[in-house]
Image 1: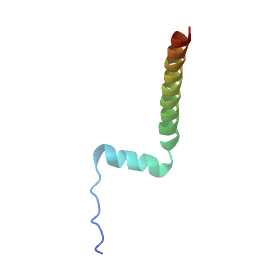
Image 2: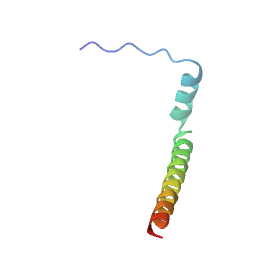
Image 3: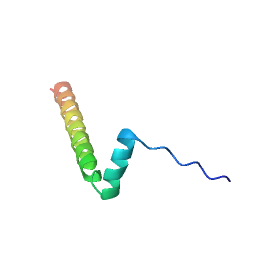
Image 4: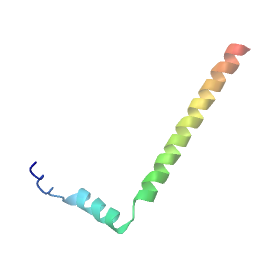
Length: 57
């Protein structure tokens, strides 16, 4: 199997790679994802609750 050629990183990709290399970045991205997921679960739970309450009464 032949090795893959090196990727030419530049601009935003290179900058992001350097941030990750220094250890700055993962926590912010994960925190934002957790907040979005929590908001989505909360919204869907509220919607299901409204449907159940409307249907039962």
